[in-house]
Image 1 (cartoon, rainbow, N blue to C red):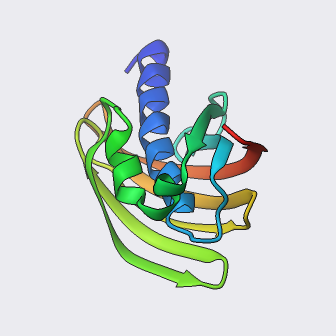
Image 2: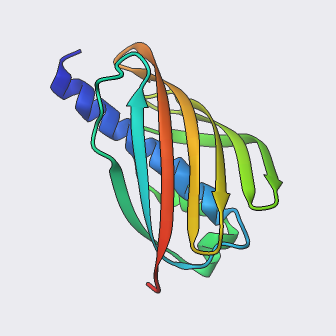
Length: 150
């Protein structure tokens, strides 16, 4: 796969993982509604020197979003991921651990752990995805902070 094609595929994959990350903080009753900036840094295990730019997204989370992560995930249009389902969801204090599977063009299998407060979120997501017909292992660092009201 050419470098430009790989970068585009990884950007779409980052967007898919961002959709998953967006649904994580919203599952927590302690998260505050408002405008959030979420950043996802992705690294590819087989290519340690390949460091794509962080993927950033600003998202306004309403009180309804905070209470229903499934609706938020369903509302994000992303051609790289669809049919995402979570399993092994556990909360312990301010930590959320999960496994996720997504269908679509990447076939993502991932596990993650995030810690949150009312105004911040930090964590990691390990994933295996089908990128250009090859299984690709990814390591993702996700962080977010609330900017204020929408």
